[in-house]
Amino acid sequence: MSETTAPTTSGTAAGVAPPRSAVVLGLLGLTVLVLPLLGLTVRTPWGRFGALVTDPVVLQALRLSVVSSLAALAVSVVLGVPLALVFARYDFPGKPFVRALAVLPMVLPPVVGGVGLLAAFGRRGLVGRPLAEATGITLPFTPVAVVIAATFVAMPFLIVTVESGLRMVDRRLEDAAATLGADRWTILRRVVLPALWPSLAAGMALCWARALGEFGATITFAGNMPGRTQTMPLAVYLELERNPEAAYLISFILLAVSVAVLVALRDRFLHTT
Amino acid sequence: MSASAPAPSTSTSTAVGLRAEVALRLGTLDLAVAFDAAPGEVVAILGPNGAGKTTLLRALAGLLPIERGQVSLGTQLLESPAHGVRVSPQQRSVGVVFQHHLLFPNLTAIENVAFGLRSRGVGRQEARTRARAWLERVELDDHANARPGALSGGQAQRVALARALAPDPALLLLDEPLAALDVDTRRSVRQQLRRHLDAFAGPVLLITHEPLEAITLADRLVILEGGRIVQDDPPDVVARRPRSTWAARLVGLNHYRGRADGHTLTLATGATLTVADPAAQPGEVLVAIHPRAVALHARPPDGSPRNTWQGTVDALDIHADQVRVHLDGPIPIVAQITGAALADLDIAEGSPLWVAVKATEIDHWPA
Image (tube, rainbow over all chains, first blue to last red; front, side, top):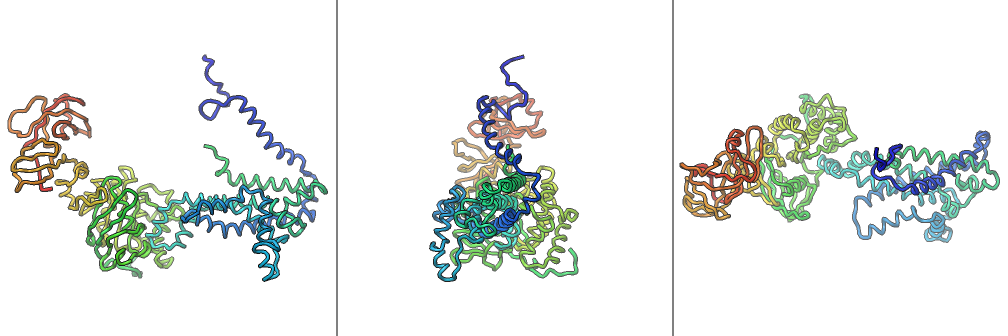
C-alpha cells in the first residue's frame, strides 16, 4: 500500500486537502463564533422563564419590537419592491451611484444612520423643521421614529434580494404574456411576482430580522423610552445592568428568531455546491 | 368545442394576409426583409444561426421595434415608423409559440391556455370553457390541472400551441416549436402541429432550421441568411434549385456558382463542367449535382461520362446503408454510395479516387 495517498477517513470535498494549520485556525474561528451562542444558551434563566417573560419591561419591549419590525417590513415591501423593479428593469444615467446610495445602510454604522435620520427628520432637520412648523408633528423619539430607523437599516436587504431575484426571472415569460395581451400590471401580478416569490420571501425574512435587531440608529433617532421606543435590543442593553436575567432571556429570544430565519432561508444560504 | 356559446370575440371568418417589410439593426445583425404570407399559408423561415430568424419573429410580434418598413395584417397597419404607427404586442392579434414553450410555471395547463383570453377581457367561466376545448383539441384535457413542470416536453409544447391559438389570433408565429423535443416526441408533435396549422385560417410563420420540418409543414420556404432573404420558393423548388450553399447543404445537394457558355460551365475555382443542355445565354449560373449522381472509381473510368477528375477522400459520413463520401479536388464534391460500393472501393480518408458525373445529371439555372 502506498503512503503517498491522502488518508480517507472523513475526506475532503474534492481535490487536495488544505494544510493542517488552516484547519486549526478555522476551528478557532468557529469557536469565536459559537462560544457566545453557547454562553447565552447556558446563562438563560430557564427556570424563571414564565415570570420573566411576563415582566412588564420585557413584555413591552417584545410587543414594540414585533409591531415596529413588522411595520418596517411592510414599509420596506411597499417601497422597496418598486425600487428593486426600477433598478432591475430601467437604465438611467447615474444608476450605479443611485443604487449604491440605496444599499449604503447595509454597510453604514447604524449610529451614523441614526445621526443622519436626526439631521433629516429631527426637530431642526431638513424635512423635520418644515414638517414641525406646518403640522406641529415631530418624529424623533416616537414609536414612528423606531419604524423609520428600522426601515432605514433593513430595507436595503429587501431591495438587493428582490433585485437579484428579478434579474433571474425569465424575461421571455414576460414577452409571452405580452403577446397574449397582458398589460404591464397583469404581467407583474401573474408572471413576475409568482416567479419572484422565493426571492421576495427571502428578502422579507432578511429585512424583518435586520429590523428586529436594530439598535444603533434606533437609540440615536428614537431614544430608549420603555413602552414607547424601547425595543428588545435596547431593553437588553439597559436591563443588562439592572436585571441581567431579563437581558439574557430577551437575548435568547432574539437568538431563537435569528436561528428560525436562517433555517427558513436554508436553501439560500446553507447550501454549498 | 361546445356549439352552445358563440365566441364573443374575434372570428377567423375573415382571415387576412400578412405584408411584412422589416428593417432593423440589433448588435451585429442588419435585418432587411420583405415578404407576404397569404391567409392559410404556412411560410417556413429557414436560415443558419444568427441569420435573424428570431429577431424577425420578435419584430412581427411587436416585441422589438422596427426601424424602417411596414407591417400590416389585411388592412390593419401594425407598424410603420414613417407614419409613427406602432401597435403594442398586447394589441396585436398575433399568437406566438416559443422554442422553449415558455408556459407560466405557476399556472396550470388550463390557466395557461386561458391566460390570453382573460387578458383580452373574456370572463373567467367563458375563458375556462374555451381553454378546456383547446386542451381537448391538443388531446391534453386530462392534464388540464397539471402545472408545466409536470408535463413532458411534447405535452408542454402542445399546451403552448393551444395557448397561442386560444385567443383566435389573425397571425400565428412559431419559433422552432419542435427544436427542444427529442426525436420520437418531435414526430408525434409535428403530426399534430400539421393538423392545427392546416385548420388555422390566417397566415403562419414557422421558424426552423430543420429542413424536414420545413418541407413537411410549410407551403413556402423563405431562406434567410445574414439578415437578407436569399430565396423565397415552394419547398420542391428549394429542394431542386437552392440559391445558396447553406440551402444546398440543407437539402443535401452539391452546389456551385459559375459562368455558363453553351455546354461549358466554368466554376469559380476555374474548373469546368460539361452539361447536356446548353445555357440559353452566357452568364452567371447556379449549379446543382445530386450526390447520388456522382460515381466513384478506383481507376480512371472509361466510357461515356464527360466530367471526370481525380480527388481525394476527405471524410466519410455513414447513415444506415448509405455513405456520403466528401472529396477534395479541383471540384470539391460529395458522393452518395452504398455500403457495398464502399467495401468494393476499399477506401479511407486520404484515398485517391476518380470522380465521374454524367453531363445529363448536372442541373444549372441563371443565378
